[in-house]
Length: 153
Image (cartoon, rainbow, N blue to C red):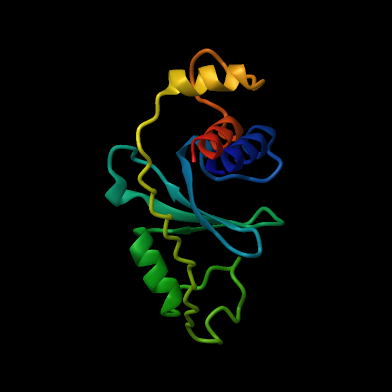
């Protein structure tokens, strides 16, 4: 997804459609809003990530917001109400923080039933003698294996 967003930003930057204030190659998408805004790291200077700043674009317009600080500083400032990002809803903090835990479904694999080793050559010979089509090498089709097991039991 970051590559697709960067391509849109590059197109706007090159055409001047919306004034992208940064070279899109320096923008790395790190988040987004349910309204369609994107939150970016401004990756300049490239070799000093502790100095990267934050930028937020406007989903349906040309406005950009820049925060001079780290991602942690940005989140702390916005969520504490110290910084207002014009693209974010005015009532962003009115409902207070909430948390809804997910309810993951735990999957446990079925235990592998111990099966005695089989003689693949014997199964292939039996299958061919009984009208089954089996490859000369590789995996024996499950229906052939099941028929073999019914035969020997």
